[in-house]
Amino acid sequence: MARANRHFMAGQVWHITQRCHQKQFLLRFQTDRRRWLYWLYQARRRYGLSVLNYIVTSNHIHLLVHDHGNNAISPAMQLIAGRTAQEFNKRHGRTGAFWQDRYHATAVQTNEHLERCMVYIDLNMVRAGEVSHPEEWSNSGYHESKHPRRRGARIDMASTCRLLGFDSPVSFLKAREHWIDSQLREGKLERQSHWTESIAVGNLDYALKMQRAFAITNPGRRTRPVGDCYAVREHGAAYWEEGSTMRTPESLGEIR
Image 1 (cartoon, rainbow, N blue to C red):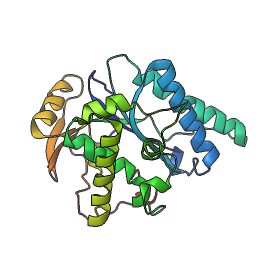
Image 2: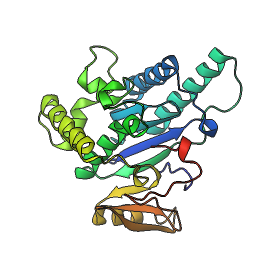
Image 3: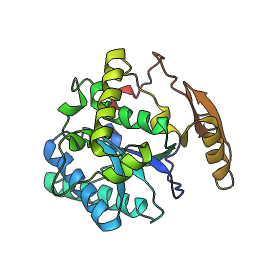
């Protein structure tokens, strides 16, 4: 996997992933996952972080955010990751690193690719075999959208609806349920590494634009087709093709 990418451009949607140290299941308990969610809420409140979706698993997290140009992402991630680690170590009498590395960020085009990325996050724990439907995993943006919070809401529903072209949360949720049901019926649950290991994902024009935008500071990246989209990856980075049965030695603890 390429070195974690953290280069941001205002106006983009970013799919952020971060894994626990040495793929340990440090978030296996509900208490620990809820503390990560608490600090996600605090990041939205303090820095204006625009959260579109998220999920906290037992050993990694997914976070989908929109960069409004307010420089919220970096301090927000420092707050969430730092406080989660500090509290966990204190609570469990532990020392040492909590996170495997700095987080990785993939830019996602705000069209049908954003829909696919959102559902890919929603289906994470179904892919892992922990639940049969996303609603069964409470530590997720899908669950929050189905059961809106009066206080402590983390999802920026207004931005989510606007970016996806829906006029209300009700119509968005109805469409989202349809997307999920379609994926479940068709059995499309394979891991798609371009959502978690690429620099950017979208159509060809979008991918080439993002490749050019990062060319000066990070040359050597290439745009390649992956299924029905295009992904910007590090030159020579290994691909996990859609539909492939190839698995790596790290599969057990991979980000799904």
